[in-house]
Length: 122
Image 1 (cartoon, rainbow, N blue to C red):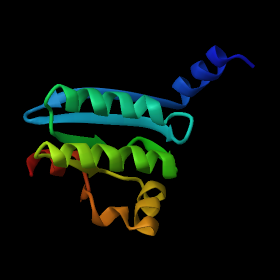
Image 2 (cartoon, rainbow, N blue to C red):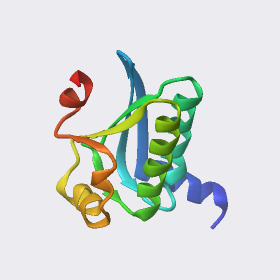
Image 3 (tube, helix red, strand yellow):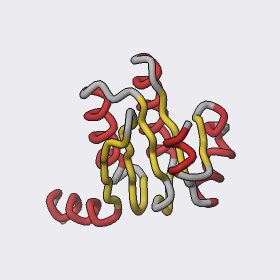
Image 4 (cartoon, one colour):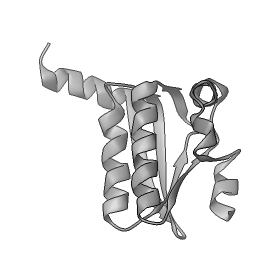
């Protein structure tokens, strides 16, 4: 299997949409966030921070799976955002994803919201 084929398959497993709402960059990953797809989320998070968007809202409502690599991508973005005076807000996590954050204790270091709307109005 060549790298191009593998890459194409990964893109199908995770799609990421980015938009600006008010003072927030809203990043919406859809699908599975794991070792193979993590770079597809890391890149837009880094790009938003590089553009000076320090308040990142990650809409997790379409995220079906997150492993430790995905968690580390989010933790890395949180550190960069906080260093720039901002933060990362997680919104609308499905129970299977929320469980990863609970087990690892990562839910204590993020601002977690029940919905995207709640995250945007804070």
